[in-house]
Length: 303
Image (cartoon, rainbow, N blue to C red; front, side, top):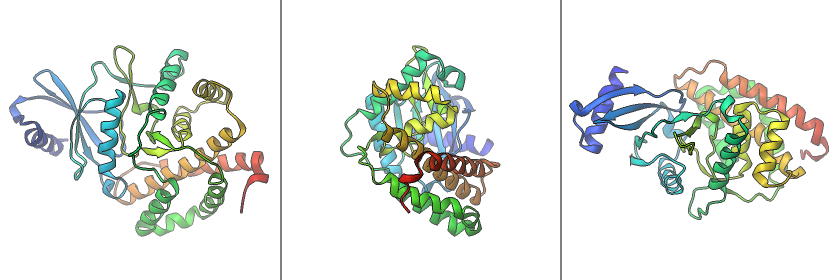
């Protein structure tokens, strides 16, 4: 924390012309696995300063993130962006007054769940003709290569899952999916509520054009939604009951999502970060969802 404080003083000086003496308070924000973020108070004005974590330069496109942050800010669903360095990934936003991150209990309140759905609709229905594409399977290939270079034995341990993923990829790619602006990391802790109950999405690092069901799958897994809760979300989101293809895509995306993030954990751990058994828990859940998927859709699997 001490070293990061000095770094933050330097960042505020270089970007906003703020001297060390003007900085009244620095506090680490809760959560966050990719980066270190801090609340910084300057003459009663609060900011959030993000310092990128280890190995992120291999995982992220900072130029694309900057454009998507500006896009989200224009939509009114990202905290106001003050500064962004697309070379270092250092970011400064204004802190949302009275903001609190969603909790599973809060998110299950019917009115708030509907607000979250409206938030997703605002993003997914927006026009973004120049937004980068989140190419899921290209990303997976890239992450596999990163893990292989750092710890090839880890890939050997999940060889069976890798085989299933590449078989299920053929099924998913048979669908005609309209890709739309997506957040790509819409876990509940990345959704903030201000004092007026307005919702914001934070941490846009992985955002891009993709299947909108990815964001729904992400939120569903992070909240551990049961079948009834998930059907409520989908029905309200679509304005109708989801069709069979949408349900199948959602199931597939949950599998891909857990596999994708397991690779992320394995690579970050190889770079010296500690996440306990998070990566293997993702692997185990993906394998469980594959068993469920095969029970339902066995005849549709292309090998």
